[in-house]
Image 1: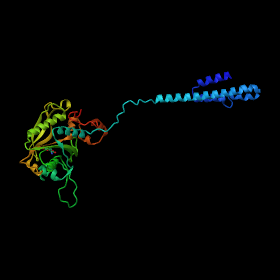
Image 2: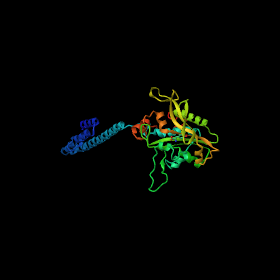
Image 3: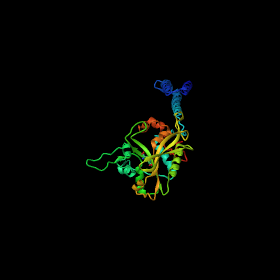
Image 4: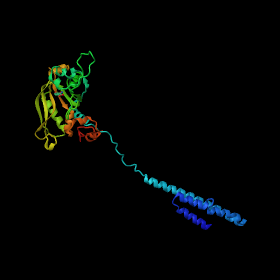
Length: 357
Ligand code: DAH
């Protein structure tokens, strides 16, 4: 019996799987197991012998069964331990940032422009994208026969049969916001009006929908000198350069008198645009002193008030600053383009924090 005990206790201790344990159980205490066979021999024994051997065999059977159970539990623990090791996870690691969308370059530039002009005391005004021809043309001193109307490739809204009123238009520029703002708030005022505009035109530098920002500053003594300073400050801040020459070229717009188109100094050395150096010029906006008739049309007395206005293409200055060659790609919603040219979300441009970093 001692040999049996020693044999099975050793074998159980050495077993390395549940299957091996089960084999040992069958061999020791199964129906035909060694201990079970020994128990059958009890019948052939004398009563005295049986009295000794019976309890001893039962005790051995119990001992083997508990050794089997203990070993089984130990194997299960070891297996769990092994699995936990494989699945170990450092919960103190930082999270993986989830990819968010990007800020479209147009939105980015609008935010940059707004931050710069806000710093100079301009607030943001808005107007409708579908406007009457009064606001888009007449009030801005562009009468029906004026060539500027034809030049603008205007989209006209559909009119109901028998409706002879002039049709509404998709605004061709942001200038009508000047009229609406002065009409509603009078003078003095200092606003910019960024937004969408529409013209029937499509090539590498024109899309039927594009963006402009209008500027308007009216007070009692505002002059071209103020316009020049404001635009210089803007261009330096926007292109993030310390110095840049501006060139004011005499021009004509129906809504300003005098009018000037503004070019910025730049170089194209090696095919890369650099603003603020070199001897080339790049046109970026139209401007001038608001025409007295326009003030009058907006309910502002031109004998008391005067000021400047300007209009600038947002898409164009976005292309210039961020080296984007084709305007049409702006509005194709190609995710690869957006990931390449887009800006980090939650990264608002500010003058203190940096406009574009
Ligand atoms: N509205 C003009 C355009 O779309 C741009 C412009 C020129 C706006 C001169 C102005 C200005 O306010 O003074 O081409």
